[in-house]
Image (spheres, one colour):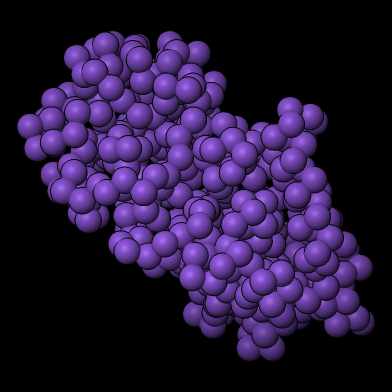
Length: 407
């Protein structure tokens, strides 16, 4: 019987050590440039009409709304970064369908609550649902995700509607990845960065970068990258997902899917005769396996009911899922640093601001350590391109949305 690594490769799974980094970077580059040119591409490369500036923002305070899940938050964000008066509220449309008046009233009321504490007139709104950005930093909602039930809002310019109903003059609507990029500015102090990248790696994934030629941030929607080699296990997860045939890279590196890939591997290995009869029974009884459950197991936290020998074998089969994800995330980041055309001088690196639980909380591997090691090799050693992953910014989307309002 073949060793687990050979079994994985026989099913099309590329181990982390065998990923062709240079080839993938070149494929990323071609897709990014095609997207920018309006040619067919798996990457949307959406213009955002906003760019980081060197404006001194110290002392400014802005009203910020953050909506992107089943809850939304409102707060005052000040620079240097501090958050006050924060409250969480249910996202309108989560529990039942709502009309446009009720939908916007929730946000307008929050603005009214916070307005007395701000010294910046413009409101920042991190709106992380599929939307088309306009040059005046409005956003036209394309569709709802997260089971939000507010059909009347689809197709509307949400910023304009909220401005009218809240009686405010200006609002900046951006998504969470762009906001995460802008959050890096809050930490720069006197340090000079040549450019900025925002990277989300949590339940899903996305990347934003500053395009030199366009002079603005571009939201790549990078989770849709489709030029990466997929295994039989990846295809099985894709087919069972709610959006088959889409978001191929996301389904290989993001938290919503890693546990499912591991479960597909365990099922295939059990079917092939690996594991004891008892372990095969345990695996056949698994209806789902979350990324956190699998990650904790691979880190040695619990045995999932397996005998010691079966647990060791199961970890050997599934740990490569996390190792591959970390390397692919690094390749993705490297491609965007290279595309930025910056980082030529060591004292003015490209700042990378990262948000998301998969990157920071995965226990199976040293995710951050692998990403840094890979970036050092792909960028610094091979290309003499310099970067810096900035310290974790708590509430990065809120802080970035505030900066969008302030600049």
